[in-house]
Image: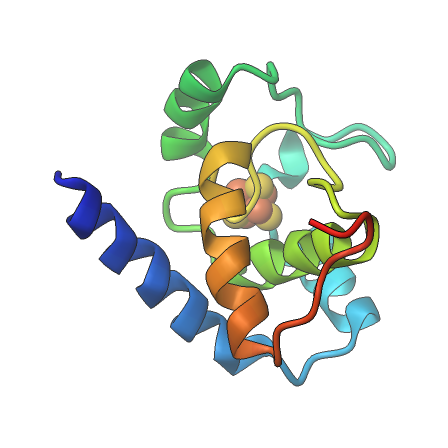
Length: 122
Ligand code: SF4
């Protein structure tokens, strides 16, 4: 995949997130907690046991997140957290993208949501 191809992929993800833009934060959280395929990995309010290493987490996510019915809700929830805090709100894989990929989507997503700067002025 070329850099240009990667950019197209992240653009498409950002566009696809428009379909969950109207959901309230609580609806996103509920969807992930009730329908997320990783629910069986979570304990209490803890996130799944991601390693924090992008490469390793991508491998795990490819298995765990494949077919998850709430991938977009999951990613939308995390990106809203990034906008609020200026950094990925969570480590590991969400939506099912590793932090580096989420940052790439975040820039495009933010443009589609009217731009602005996330907290911290990035
Ligand atoms: S996309 Fe992955 S991390 Fe997000 S809820 Fe689904 S299984 Fe869990």
